[in-house]
Image (cartoon, rainbow, N blue to C red; front, side):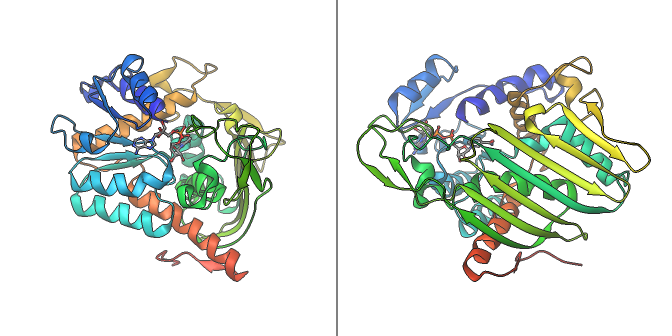
Length: 373
Ligand SMILES: NC(=O)c1ccc[n+]([C@@H]2O[C@H](COP(=O)([O-])OP(=O)(O)OC[C@H]3O[C@@H](n4cnc5c(N)ncnc54)[C@H](O)[C@@H]3O)[C@@H](O)[C@H]2O)c1
């Protein structure tokens, strides 16, 4: 993610020239010396350190990105806010609702702009879907179906990295992919008010990481195995404030779908279907037509025209991070919060927390602080 944030920053000048900012990659922090050196040699940072405090104490630095494993998000984000540095933080914002609330509060207290890595919001076809919903073209929204199915943890020999240890990661796919899916659904359809959930861990033991196994998806050795403490699968039944009902499901250990992140929204007059595997397409149906038609991303849909000259050409994942970098830096420059904010990061985790509570109680749980009127 650190590499993607870097490419995002570098792209601002080319794709959003009107912002008129010079991006200077001043310093990178990584305790793994080879990764820090890579950032200097290959990504173009001027200097490297093993201690992120060197970045926060550097008056030359205007904004920071937080792309560390989840267990460091709260610590670094609160320190960044106290140092007066606006921050762009990866999701899940915290390991728990308490941590996420602390991060959002620290940013609010310090008055710093924030952004959270909810990259799928920036997909032009998602922007188009949102406009169709907001304009009423789909009628009243009855139901939402999100399924974020991935295979990144489907290999039982993937090492027991930070992603599989509860203290390091938070609850697992609930935080990792459900937070993305919840944010996307809330962004388009409005707040979730109530959930009931189940989770499961399919692969219960994994090989301990070898010494250089710091990276999240490294293979483990043939030595001893340790217990996986986080969930591989989660499914939520949801109610939305504006009357829709839905299912939000995620897996990181399915064989087949690589990053098959789908969102379907069904209204009284029509529906839309989107799949990240075919990110530049939106399936649209209306009550008076038979079947779906495919709307390819085109100028007029979100920021598509910045990246490609015409319909039929494709944007990619990295471009979403460039849009996110732009919205973050624009928030800082203009003093207006544009990007998905830390408060929105907190709201996604509030749904995750309700899902965890539902697992414990076996019943429906209301999302704290959502106005149901
Ligand atoms: N937005 C998305 O779609 C998306 C996708 C993947 C990951 N993520 C998020 O990005 C974050 C990082 O995930 P990843 O897959 O890049 O993990 P990773 O394990 O591949 O990389 C984490 C990096 O942080 C470094 N690190 C560890 N301790 C540090 C410290 N004290 N200071 C500075 N750096 C430190 C590690 O050495 C490593 O280089 C996670 O929160 C993850 O959920 C978001």
